[in-house]
Length: 434
Ligand code: CTP
Image (tube, rainbow, N blue to C red; front, side):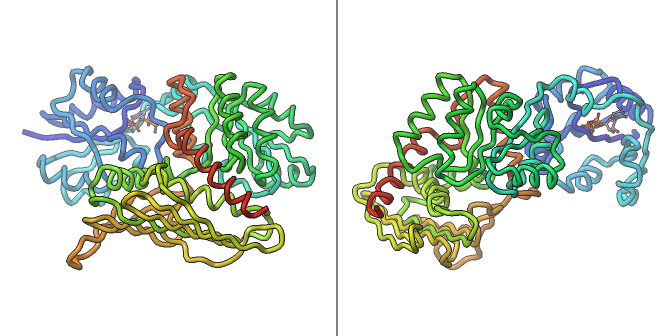
Protein backbone atom coordinates (compact mmCIF):
# COMPACT_ATOMS: atom_id res chain seq x y z
CA UNK A 1 0.00 0.00 0.00
CA UNK A 2 1.37 3.42 -0.97
CA UNK A 3 0.94 6.10 1.65
CA UNK A 4 0.76 9.83 0.90
CA UNK A 5 0.95 12.76 3.31
CA UNK A 6 0.25 16.47 2.88
CA UNK A 7 0.07 19.42 5.29
CA UNK A 8 -1.67 22.77 5.50
CA UNK A 9 -3.75 25.17 7.53
CA UNK A 10 -6.80 24.77 5.27
CA UNK A 11 -8.34 27.97 6.58
CA UNK A 12 -11.59 29.08 4.90
CA UNK A 13 -11.54 25.88 2.87
CA UNK A 14 -11.49 26.62 -0.86
CA UNK A 15 -11.18 25.06 -4.30
CA UNK A 16 -7.34 25.15 -4.22
CA UNK A 17 -7.39 23.00 -1.08
CA UNK A 18 -9.83 20.51 -2.63
CA UNK A 19 -7.71 20.23 -5.78
CA UNK A 20 -4.49 19.52 -3.96
CA UNK A 21 -6.10 16.85 -1.79
CA UNK A 22 -7.63 15.20 -4.85
CA UNK A 23 -4.32 15.15 -6.70
CA UNK A 24 -2.40 14.02 -3.62
CA UNK A 25 -4.75 11.07 -3.21
CA UNK A 26 -3.96 9.95 -6.77
CA UNK A 27 -0.34 9.29 -5.73
CA UNK A 28 -1.25 6.36 -3.50
CA UNK A 29 -3.89 4.34 -1.68
CA UNK A 30 -3.95 6.04 1.69
CA UNK A 31 -3.95 9.80 2.25
CA UNK A 32 -2.96 11.42 5.56
CA UNK A 33 -3.50 15.15 6.04
CA UNK A 34 -1.67 17.17 8.70
CA UNK A 35 -3.73 20.19 9.75
CA UNK A 36 -1.82 22.88 11.68
CA UNK A 37 -2.70 23.27 15.36
CA UNK A 38 -3.65 26.67 16.76
CA UNK A 39 -0.61 27.00 19.02
CA UNK A 40 1.70 26.04 16.21
CA UNK A 41 0.24 28.76 13.98
CA UNK A 42 0.31 31.38 16.75
CA UNK A 43 3.89 30.44 17.64
CA UNK A 44 5.05 30.93 14.07
CA UNK A 45 3.32 34.30 13.87
CA UNK A 46 0.38 33.21 11.68
CA UNK A 47 -2.21 35.10 13.68
CA UNK A 48 -4.61 35.58 10.85
CA UNK A 49 -6.23 32.13 10.81
CA UNK A 50 -9.99 32.52 10.89
CA UNK A 51 -11.47 29.04 11.38
CA UNK A 52 -10.97 26.95 14.51
CA UNK A 53 -8.95 23.76 14.30
CA UNK A 54 -12.16 21.72 14.63
CA UNK A 55 -13.74 23.52 11.65
CA UNK A 56 -10.63 23.14 9.52
CA UNK A 57 -10.46 19.42 10.31
CA UNK A 58 -14.17 19.02 9.57
CA UNK A 59 -13.78 20.71 6.18
CA UNK A 60 -10.87 18.47 5.21
CA UNK A 61 -12.84 15.42 6.35
CA UNK A 62 -15.94 16.46 4.39
CA UNK A 63 -14.06 16.17 1.08
CA UNK A 64 -14.33 12.40 1.50
CA UNK A 65 -10.81 12.12 0.06
CA UNK A 66 -8.88 11.67 3.27
CA UNK A 67 -8.14 8.45 5.15
CA UNK A 68 -6.59 9.95 8.26
CA UNK A 69 -6.21 13.44 9.75
CA UNK A 70 -3.44 14.39 12.17
CA UNK A 71 -2.63 17.70 13.84
CA UNK A 72 0.70 19.41 13.17
CA UNK A 73 1.68 20.76 16.56
CA UNK A 74 5.33 21.76 16.38
CA UNK A 75 8.22 22.66 14.13
CA UNK A 76 10.04 19.56 12.92
CA UNK A 77 7.10 17.22 13.49
CA UNK A 78 7.07 16.29 9.81
CA UNK A 79 10.24 14.17 10.09
CA UNK A 80 8.73 12.08 12.89
CA UNK A 81 5.47 11.73 10.94
CA UNK A 82 7.23 10.41 7.82
CA UNK A 83 8.87 7.69 9.89
CA UNK A 84 5.87 6.94 12.09
CA UNK A 85 3.37 6.58 9.24
CA UNK A 86 5.89 5.00 6.82
CA UNK A 87 5.13 7.53 4.08
CA UNK A 88 5.96 7.01 0.38
CA UNK A 89 5.01 10.44 -1.00
CA UNK A 90 4.98 13.89 0.57
CA UNK A 91 2.79 16.12 -1.60
CA UNK A 92 2.61 19.91 -1.25
CA UNK A 93 1.83 22.97 -3.40
CA UNK A 94 4.63 24.53 -5.40
CA UNK A 95 4.56 27.69 -3.25
CA UNK A 96 6.83 25.48 -1.11
CA UNK A 97 9.03 24.35 -4.03
CA UNK A 98 12.49 23.31 -2.82
CA UNK A 99 11.66 24.06 0.84
CA UNK A 100 11.22 20.40 1.79
CA UNK A 101 13.92 18.81 -0.35
CA UNK A 102 15.78 17.71 2.78
CA UNK A 103 12.90 15.28 3.38
CA UNK A 104 13.64 13.32 0.21
CA UNK A 105 15.82 10.96 2.28
CA UNK A 106 12.65 9.71 3.91
CA UNK A 107 10.19 9.62 0.99
CA UNK A 108 9.58 11.04 -2.47
CA UNK A 109 8.86 14.76 -2.54
CA UNK A 110 6.16 15.98 -4.93
CA UNK A 111 5.47 19.69 -5.52
CA UNK A 112 2.18 20.30 -7.36
CA UNK A 113 1.17 23.46 -9.14
CA UNK A 114 -1.13 25.65 -7.02
CA UNK A 115 -4.64 26.37 -8.22
CA UNK A 116 -4.48 29.87 -9.63
CA UNK A 117 -6.42 32.87 -8.36
CA UNK A 118 -7.43 31.70 -4.90
CA UNK A 119 -5.91 31.63 -1.42
CA UNK A 120 -7.02 31.76 2.21
CA UNK A 121 -5.23 35.10 2.57
CA UNK A 122 -7.35 36.63 -0.17
CA UNK A 123 -10.59 35.20 1.23
CA UNK A 124 -9.75 36.49 4.71
CA UNK A 125 -8.98 39.96 3.39
CA UNK A 126 -12.36 40.08 1.68
CA UNK A 127 -14.30 38.82 4.68
CA UNK A 128 -12.70 40.84 7.47
CA UNK A 129 -13.91 44.13 8.79
CA UNK A 130 -11.10 46.66 8.60
CA UNK A 131 -9.99 48.60 11.65
CA UNK A 132 -7.96 51.76 11.17
CA UNK A 133 -5.63 52.59 14.00
CA UNK A 134 -4.65 56.21 14.56
CA UNK A 135 -1.67 57.09 16.74
CA UNK A 136 -1.55 60.17 18.95
CA UNK A 137 1.98 60.64 20.18
CA UNK A 138 4.57 63.00 21.57
CA UNK A 139 7.54 61.05 20.27
CA UNK A 140 8.62 59.53 16.98
CA UNK A 141 9.00 55.95 18.22
CA UNK A 142 5.93 53.83 17.45
CA UNK A 143 6.61 50.97 19.90
CA UNK A 144 6.43 48.70 16.82
CA UNK A 145 2.65 49.03 16.48
CA UNK A 146 2.83 49.85 12.76
CA UNK A 147 4.67 46.65 11.81
CA UNK A 148 2.91 44.41 14.32
CA UNK A 149 -0.64 45.57 13.49
CA UNK A 150 -0.16 44.47 9.89
CA UNK A 151 0.27 40.89 11.11
CA UNK A 152 -3.31 40.77 12.39
CA UNK A 153 -6.12 40.54 9.86
CA UNK A 154 -7.97 43.74 9.18
CA UNK A 155 -5.75 45.97 11.36
CA UNK A 156 -3.60 48.76 10.06
CA UNK A 157 -2.12 51.98 11.35
CA UNK A 158 -3.33 54.64 8.96
CA UNK A 159 -2.75 58.04 10.55
CA UNK A 160 -0.90 60.06 13.13
CA UNK A 161 -1.44 63.24 15.10
CA UNK A 162 0.91 64.96 17.50
CA UNK A 163 0.44 68.27 19.30
CA UNK A 164 3.89 69.04 17.88
CA UNK A 165 3.67 69.28 14.11
CA UNK A 166 7.30 68.22 13.49
CA UNK A 167 6.78 65.02 15.44
CA UNK A 168 3.75 63.95 13.39
CA UNK A 169 5.61 64.75 10.19
CA UNK A 170 8.64 62.69 11.21
CA UNK A 171 6.40 59.87 12.42
CA UNK A 172 4.41 59.74 9.18
CA UNK A 173 7.57 59.61 7.12
CA UNK A 174 9.40 57.12 9.31
CA UNK A 175 6.53 54.61 9.22
CA UNK A 176 5.26 55.46 5.76
CA UNK A 177 1.71 56.18 6.92
CA UNK A 178 -1.13 57.28 4.65
CA UNK A 179 -2.35 60.21 6.71
CA UNK A 180 -1.21 62.97 8.96
CA UNK A 181 -3.67 65.11 10.90
CA UNK A 182 -3.16 68.56 12.35
CA UNK A 183 -6.12 68.35 14.71
CA UNK A 184 -6.75 65.56 17.21
CA UNK A 185 -10.44 65.59 16.30
CA UNK A 186 -9.59 64.71 12.72
CA UNK A 187 -7.48 61.74 13.78
CA UNK A 188 -10.34 60.55 16.00
CA UNK A 189 -12.86 61.06 13.22
CA UNK A 190 -10.82 58.98 10.78
CA UNK A 191 -9.84 56.11 13.09
CA UNK A 192 -11.64 53.16 14.69
CA UNK A 193 -8.96 52.67 17.35
CA UNK A 194 -6.70 55.31 18.90
CA UNK A 195 -3.30 54.35 20.27
CA UNK A 196 -2.36 56.89 22.94
CA UNK A 197 1.42 57.06 23.20
CA UNK A 198 2.57 60.00 25.26
CA UNK A 199 3.69 60.99 28.74
CA UNK A 200 1.35 60.30 31.63
CA UNK A 201 0.24 63.91 32.12
CA UNK A 202 -1.54 64.00 28.75
CA UNK A 203 -3.04 60.52 28.65
CA UNK A 204 -6.35 60.97 30.45
CA UNK A 205 -7.39 63.92 28.38
CA UNK A 206 -6.52 62.29 25.05
CA UNK A 207 -8.22 59.03 26.04
CA UNK A 208 -11.31 60.85 27.33
CA UNK A 209 -11.77 62.79 24.10
CA UNK A 210 -11.57 59.67 21.93
CA UNK A 211 -13.83 57.60 24.20
CA UNK A 212 -16.48 60.31 24.04
CA UNK A 213 -16.44 59.95 20.27
CA UNK A 214 -17.00 56.19 20.60
CA UNK A 215 -13.51 55.05 19.63
CA UNK A 216 -11.65 52.03 21.00
CA UNK A 217 -8.43 52.80 22.84
CA UNK A 218 -5.03 51.25 23.35
CA UNK A 219 -2.89 53.27 25.76
CA UNK A 220 0.49 53.03 27.43
CA UNK A 221 -0.33 52.48 31.11
CA UNK A 222 -1.03 53.84 33.57
CA UNK A 223 -3.58 56.26 32.15
CA UNK A 224 -3.17 58.24 35.37
CA UNK A 225 -1.94 57.90 38.94
CA UNK A 226 -5.34 59.01 40.14
CA UNK A 227 -7.72 56.11 40.76
CA UNK A 228 -10.74 58.40 40.29
CA UNK A 229 -9.61 59.20 36.74
CA UNK A 230 -9.12 55.52 35.90
CA UNK A 231 -12.64 54.82 37.17
CA UNK A 232 -14.00 57.69 35.09
CA UNK A 233 -12.36 56.35 31.91
CA UNK A 234 -13.61 52.80 32.56
CA UNK A 235 -17.12 54.18 33.04
CA UNK A 236 -16.86 56.27 29.89
CA UNK A 237 -15.71 53.25 27.86
CA UNK A 238 -18.73 51.29 29.13
CA UNK A 239 -21.16 54.09 28.32
CA UNK A 240 -19.81 54.26 24.79
CA UNK A 241 -19.55 50.48 24.46
CA UNK A 242 -15.90 50.56 23.42
CA UNK A 243 -12.71 48.79 24.44
CA UNK A 244 -10.22 50.52 26.72
CA UNK A 245 -7.10 48.43 26.59
CA UNK A 246 -3.77 48.84 28.37
CA UNK A 247 -0.71 48.31 26.27
CA UNK A 248 0.70 45.67 28.58
CA UNK A 249 1.93 43.10 26.10
CA UNK A 250 3.17 40.67 28.71
CA UNK A 251 -0.33 39.47 29.62
CA UNK A 252 -1.08 38.52 26.02
CA UNK A 253 2.00 36.35 25.68
CA UNK A 254 1.75 32.61 26.19
CA UNK A 255 4.70 32.30 28.60
CA UNK A 256 3.20 34.78 31.05
CA UNK A 257 0.03 32.71 31.19
CA UNK A 258 2.18 29.69 31.98
CA UNK A 259 3.73 31.67 34.83
CA UNK A 260 0.29 32.63 36.14
CA UNK A 261 -0.92 29.08 35.81
CA UNK A 262 1.97 27.81 37.92
CA UNK A 263 1.78 30.47 40.60
CA UNK A 264 -1.99 30.92 40.88
CA UNK A 265 -2.65 27.20 40.49
CA UNK A 266 -0.38 26.23 43.39
CA UNK A 267 2.14 24.36 41.23
CA UNK A 268 5.10 25.96 43.03
CA UNK A 269 3.43 25.53 46.43
CA UNK A 270 2.44 28.44 48.66
CA UNK A 271 4.02 31.70 47.53
CA UNK A 272 6.35 33.14 50.15
CA UNK A 273 8.04 35.94 48.30
CA UNK A 274 7.58 38.10 45.22
CA UNK A 275 10.62 40.14 44.35
CA UNK A 276 10.70 42.29 41.29
CA UNK A 277 12.81 45.15 40.01
CA UNK A 278 12.84 47.34 36.96
CA UNK A 279 14.74 50.39 35.76
CA UNK A 280 15.05 52.46 32.64
CA UNK A 281 17.09 55.40 31.60
CA UNK A 282 15.11 57.52 29.18
CA UNK A 283 16.05 61.19 29.24
CA UNK A 284 13.27 62.02 26.78
CA UNK A 285 10.37 60.96 28.96
CA UNK A 286 9.43 62.56 32.26
CA UNK A 287 7.58 60.69 34.99
CA UNK A 288 8.58 57.32 33.59
CA UNK A 289 8.46 56.12 37.18
CA UNK A 290 4.70 55.57 36.95
CA UNK A 291 4.97 53.54 33.74
CA UNK A 292 7.65 51.30 35.21
CA UNK A 293 5.77 50.82 38.48
CA UNK A 294 2.54 49.94 36.74
CA UNK A 295 4.26 47.16 34.82
CA UNK A 296 5.81 45.79 37.99
CA UNK A 297 2.77 45.98 40.25
CA UNK A 298 0.59 44.05 37.84
CA UNK A 299 2.23 40.61 38.21
CA UNK A 300 2.32 41.09 41.98
CA UNK A 301 -1.42 41.78 42.12
CA UNK A 302 -2.15 38.87 39.79
CA UNK A 303 -0.06 36.42 41.79
CA UNK A 304 -0.53 37.54 45.40
CA UNK A 305 -3.86 39.34 45.05
CA UNK A 306 -4.93 42.71 46.41
CA UNK A 307 -5.43 41.86 50.07
CA UNK A 308 -2.11 42.85 51.58
CA UNK A 309 -2.18 43.93 55.20
CA UNK A 310 0.38 46.69 55.06
CA UNK A 311 2.38 48.62 52.54
CA UNK A 312 5.40 50.80 52.94
CA UNK A 313 7.15 53.01 50.39
CA UNK A 314 10.59 54.58 50.28
CA UNK A 315 11.00 57.20 47.58
CA UNK A 316 13.90 59.38 46.45
CA UNK A 317 13.68 62.25 43.99
CA UNK A 318 15.78 63.90 41.34
CA UNK A 319 14.26 67.34 40.84
CA UNK A 320 10.53 66.78 40.35
CA UNK A 321 10.98 63.26 39.09
CA UNK A 322 10.91 60.17 41.29
CA UNK A 323 14.32 58.59 40.86
CA UNK A 324 13.97 55.44 42.94
CA UNK A 325 11.22 53.73 44.89
CA UNK A 326 11.19 50.64 47.03
CA UNK A 327 7.70 49.32 47.71
CA UNK A 328 7.05 46.68 50.32
CA UNK A 329 3.81 44.78 50.71
CA UNK A 330 3.03 42.54 53.65
CA UNK A 331 0.56 39.79 52.78
CA UNK A 332 -0.73 37.35 55.44
CA UNK A 333 1.78 34.67 54.45
CA UNK A 334 4.04 36.37 51.94
CA UNK A 335 6.12 39.45 51.27
CA UNK A 336 6.54 41.45 48.10
CA UNK A 337 9.37 43.85 47.41
CA UNK A 338 9.34 45.98 44.29
CA UNK A 339 12.24 48.25 43.36
CA UNK A 340 11.85 50.80 40.60
CA UNK A 341 14.70 52.89 39.27
CA UNK A 342 14.05 55.79 36.96
CA UNK A 343 17.32 56.98 35.36
CA UNK A 344 19.03 54.98 38.08
CA UNK A 345 20.25 51.47 37.43
CA UNK A 346 18.49 48.61 39.20
CA UNK A 347 18.90 45.07 37.89
CA UNK A 348 15.80 43.94 36.07
CA UNK A 349 14.61 40.67 37.48
CA UNK A 350 11.62 38.82 38.79
CA UNK A 351 11.79 36.11 41.41
CA UNK A 352 8.89 34.23 42.94
CA UNK A 353 9.68 31.88 45.78
CA UNK A 354 7.18 29.14 46.55
CA UNK A 355 7.35 26.37 49.13
CA UNK A 356 7.95 23.84 46.34
CA UNK A 357 9.88 25.75 43.70
CA UNK A 358 11.30 29.13 42.72
CA UNK A 359 10.64 30.93 39.45
CA UNK A 360 13.10 33.39 37.95
CA UNK A 361 12.91 35.68 34.97
CA UNK A 362 16.09 37.57 34.28
CA UNK A 363 16.77 40.81 32.41
CA UNK A 364 13.82 42.65 30.91
CA UNK A 365 11.45 40.10 32.44
CA UNK A 366 8.36 42.05 31.24
CA UNK A 367 9.20 41.11 27.68
CA UNK A 368 10.93 37.85 28.40
CA UNK A 369 10.10 34.83 26.30
CA UNK A 370 11.08 32.39 29.02
CA UNK A 371 11.35 31.68 32.72
CA UNK A 372 13.28 29.15 34.77
CA UNK A 373 11.84 26.96 37.47
CA UNK A 374 14.15 25.67 40.21
CA UNK A 375 13.13 22.80 42.43
CA UNK A 376 14.84 22.02 45.74
CA UNK A 377 17.74 19.62 45.53
CA UNK A 378 19.81 21.57 43.05
CA UNK A 379 18.65 19.72 39.95
CA UNK A 380 18.81 21.57 36.63
CA UNK A 381 16.30 24.35 36.02
CA UNK A 382 13.22 23.57 33.95
CA UNK A 383 12.84 26.18 31.19
CA UNK A 384 9.44 27.33 30.02
CA UNK A 385 9.48 29.37 26.87
CA UNK A 386 7.72 30.66 23.81
CA UNK A 387 9.27 31.96 20.63
CA UNK A 388 8.12 34.86 18.54
CA UNK A 389 9.57 37.73 16.61
CA UNK A 390 8.97 41.38 17.45
CA UNK A 391 7.85 42.80 20.78
CA UNK A 392 4.56 40.92 21.08
CA UNK A 393 2.26 43.83 20.16
CA UNK A 394 0.59 41.58 17.59
CA UNK A 395 -0.70 39.32 20.39
CA UNK A 396 -2.33 42.29 22.12
CA UNK A 397 -3.95 43.39 18.85
CA UNK A 398 -5.05 39.82 18.21
CA UNK A 399 -6.74 39.81 21.66
CA UNK A 400 -8.48 43.04 20.71
CA UNK A 401 -9.56 41.50 17.42
CA UNK A 402 -11.10 38.55 19.29
CA UNK A 403 -12.88 40.90 21.69
CA UNK A 404 -14.30 42.91 18.78
CA UNK A 405 -15.46 39.73 17.09
CA UNK A 406 -17.15 38.49 20.27
CA UNK A 407 -18.65 41.89 21.12
CA UNK A 408 -16.81 41.92 24.45
CA UNK A 409 -15.46 45.19 25.80
CA UNK A 410 -13.84 44.24 29.11
CA UNK A 411 -10.28 42.98 28.77
CA UNK A 412 -9.35 39.78 30.57
CA UNK A 413 -5.63 40.52 30.14
CA UNK A 414 -5.54 43.33 32.67
CA UNK A 415 -8.75 43.40 34.70
CA UNK A 416 -10.40 46.72 35.56
CA UNK A 417 -9.94 46.29 39.30
CA UNK A 418 -6.21 45.69 38.71
CA UNK A 419 -5.84 48.99 36.82
CA UNK A 420 -7.71 50.77 39.62
CA UNK A 421 -5.65 49.15 42.37
CA UNK A 422 -2.40 50.08 40.60
CA UNK A 423 -3.55 53.69 40.40
CA UNK A 424 -4.43 53.64 44.10
CA UNK A 425 -0.90 52.53 44.97
CA UNK A 426 0.65 55.09 42.64
CA UNK A 427 -1.55 57.78 44.11
CA UNK A 428 -0.31 56.98 47.62
CA UNK A 429 3.27 57.23 46.41
CA UNK A 430 2.51 60.45 44.60
CA UNK A 431 1.05 61.94 47.75
CA UNK A 432 4.06 60.98 49.89
CA UNK A 433 6.14 62.63 47.28
CA UNK A 434 4.29 65.94 47.16
N1 CTP B 1 -2.92 25.32 -2.24
C1 CTP B 1 -3.08 25.17 -3.61
N2 CTP B 1 -3.68 26.14 -4.34
C2 CTP B 1 -4.12 27.27 -3.76
C3 CTP B 1 -3.98 27.43 -2.36
C4 CTP B 1 -3.37 26.43 -1.63
O1 CTP B 1 -2.66 24.15 -4.18
N3 CTP B 1 -4.67 28.20 -4.50
C5 CTP B 1 -2.26 24.28 -1.47
C6 CTP B 1 -0.99 24.77 -0.78
O2 CTP B 1 0.09 24.80 -1.70
C7 CTP B 1 -0.81 23.73 0.30
C8 CTP B 1 -2.26 23.38 0.68
O3 CTP B 1 -3.08 23.87 -0.39
O4 CTP B 1 -0.19 22.58 -0.22
C9 CTP B 1 -2.68 24.03 1.97
O5 CTP B 1 -2.39 25.41 1.85
P1 CTP B 1 -2.72 26.56 2.88
O6 CTP B 1 -1.47 27.26 3.20
O7 CTP B 1 -3.55 26.02 3.97
O8 CTP B 1 -3.66 27.48 1.93
P2 CTP B 1 -3.41 28.92 1.32
O9 CTP B 1 -4.63 29.30 0.56
O10 CTP B 1 -2.12 28.95 0.58
O11 CTP B 1 -3.31 29.78 2.65
P3 CTP B 1 -2.56 31.16 2.97
O12 CTP B 1 -3.11 32.16 1.99
O13 CTP B 1 -2.91 31.44 4.40
O14 CTP B 1 -1.09 30.90 2.77
